[in-house]
Length: 175
Image (cartoon, rainbow, N blue to C red; front, side, top):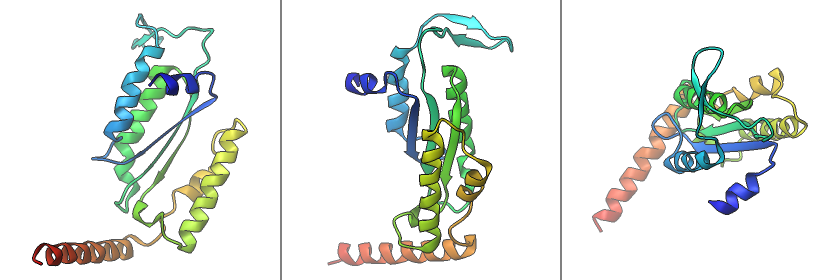
């Protein structure tokens, strides 16, 4: 962890990336964030809204956050708990959340489909925007929220893939 903490020192942006597991972050990212606690001050104070927070050293520059995730489900609603988590993380770290990039239908990301290629170009544009110290533009956010396929087409093809994989596994098991 020490080399990672050293690498993160002075960073402008901390990109948090995780596949969606049971509507939230992976255990690996959770452990990473838990171990980041050593970077904070253990003392408490109340905010203007009446909520307790750890103190923030005014001389310490904390990186802004960017959250990225994908899931196999077709609906973006599966990212709600993760989104709430990262918003709370930014609030508790007393830093800015620059953006959230969530890809539903994530199983398609490795395929050479025109909508996937377009999506990846928008992810690249999002990287430029963040790299220039900007929040994600409304145009970029909107483009990144588009589905690759209609939900019914995606579900039908995903289920067919699962059926084929399960049948193949059963065949191999019976050999």
